[in-house]
Amino acid sequence: MNFLAITFFALLFIVGNSLSYLPVYGHASPITYEPPPNQIIDSVQSIPDKVTIKFIESPEPRDSSIKVVNSNNERIDNNDLQVLDSDKSLTVSLDKSKIVPGVYIVNWLVLSKADGHVTKGSYVFSVAESNTQQIQRQTQQQPQNITNVSSGYSKNITTADDVLLKFDITPFKVGQNTFDLSVSYINGTAVENTRNVFLEFNNPSKNLGPLVVTMEKEEAGHYSTTGNFLSQNGGWEIKITIQRIGEYDINQLFNVEIK
Image (tube, rainbow, N blue to C red; front, side):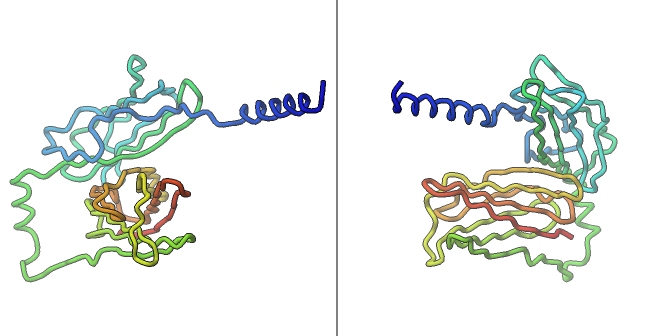
């Protein structure tokens, strides 16, 4: 066997062994949610009896969970997790006696029966006030000449490759906020080779997250989304991921404190 043939088979051996160590991606990722993420349910009476999440792989019941909490981090489900093997779903019933208008967080964790990997995440839904409740709340507020306006959150960061990120949160409070992101070069030109922009929210002290949302493109270099992602007070880690065409992704972490 000549030198070229020996080299060829040696390379095949090396590549084959290298491929055997590559990670396998087949985790139990969610397909559908009920109620859906960011849904605003019009009344307490309209809320479903259960939270149900369907996955691409069957969950292992002994090491999987769904916990539903309110904005005070108090659990409002009945801790009666069931696995529906027929459609690869997890479900837990809700204690409707504990549900009032407000924001609710669904935390889920799943061990896949197929590959043994653990995945987890969070999402939020809201229950709206009725018209009567809104009127009662408004009459109990302070007089109209007393105002309490949040100044919002704004921060500019220049990345290592000279991209300027301007990140704004308004009104910057627990509950619904609008998140705006401007992405430009330091000369002011918008970054246009963007494929996707994601926000990931985590509150480590309260074991909330990751909660991931895709930002909508408003115009070149400007992205926005609105939702109840800052569902509780405390310290939040907000990670921005900007996927670029033909260049490395931009990953930037913002630490914010909601009081």
